[in-house]
Length: 441
Image (tube, rainbow, N blue to C red; front, side):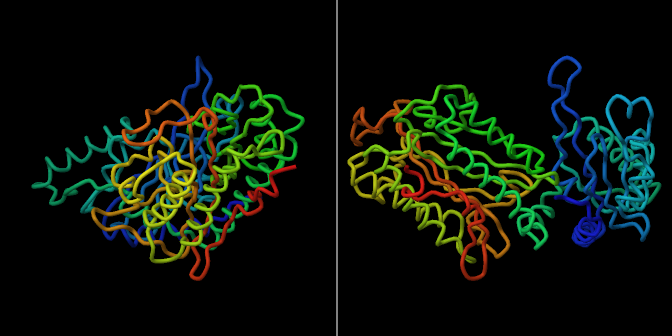
């Protein structure tokens, strides 16, 4: 269970402020988003804002002022306490809570932001702000900056540029602390248990949506916030649609069921697991052949999740096994390197083999910097998720064999969440079983 620990966020702020080195960062929280009429979607805080503050209310703005003296480096602008609003929409921490609980050195009502911003920016050499994401706040910042530039000859200072906070925060967030790793272990464990619950109860379900309800209900029962993303519960040919989320088809005997689902904890750490299994408890010959290829590719890729290698290297290791396996069953033909170079496998496998995982499901962090591939380091967490999807949606590339009808409608992905360790990778999602012997009845 999550308990707010201000020291976790305070330590992150100290690192962030040291990286700013004279700059002023402005990081807005998220706003409520209208669903329809006067109803909003459930609130989801901005990940960068959360990472540095732990403050989970809408409309807030955080300032990180490395150019100011102690006592004026971490500023929060928040919704003030207001009885009528709290009666309708719930508790607010207000200015006092922002200072006493969340350890803002100073806090103000958010309606004071445009008035107080100029004095807080006074003396900074650069502004750190994500342009293009929050037009209302951006307008205030740009007007403030323009005024300071116009008056720089008189007042003797003005910030000389605006820079993205991702330059600093991405490097911090991609490497998980021990605290974060434990939170990720919990998120992934709950997610894995939900997958096992779904598979063990599939005989009692007759629609994809019932499986979705079982999984997402389990997330809530375990104290999670809910699903980390729109759950994919795709039976039969639906599994060949990578981001299928309709989840409303009948479950048919003889089909496979692909479930891509993970929970989000109350502090936003996420799981992301995919399993594919036979609805009737028995793989057909064609289904088994494809599954075995993917499982071999995934295991080999996971074994390569070690410090010093790149995510592209891991992808290529999986890709070569997938292609060679597809050649053996005559769904591809030709030289493996040639198939990779021309991309003539992409009608069967059209995505990369993984992504970073953390506060965001597709978490921040570069995979390459120009021609330089970013090497894995201990403390990174990524998914490993090869798959094969056989349908008529994409044309068979010239020179590749036409697909026999018996293969069509098979969509399989196997996805695990893997922690990079100095010696051997740790599969956080191992509680979700994936061996054929475990999936068959």
